[in-house]
Amino acid sequence: MNSQWVAVIVTSVLCYAIKYIGHAIPEIWLAHPRVQRITNLIPIVLLSALVAMQAFTTKTKFMVDHRLAGITVAVVALAAKLPFPVVVIGAMATSAIVYRLKI
Image (cartoon, rainbow, N blue to C red; front, side, top):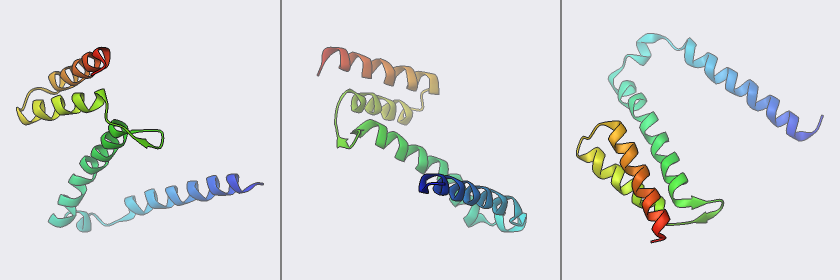
């Protein structure tokens, strides 16, 4: 068995252990207000990091291109409290137009 299989198996076991521990934590600990605030922010932080990585990097290089225009429109639409489909379609259309115009 090579080192890649060992890494896959060890990672799988660790993931299972973390998931099991998450289910075994007493509910009273999770009901604490500080834990509630933190767990509510985790998905937002992860999604923001994913969007930033996808928008500003290509392979290993930092890039600013048409995706920045789409994200800008999405941020403005979210700040204006527009419905989510409008945000997505607006960002998509802006990104496509800027890409097509090669601005």
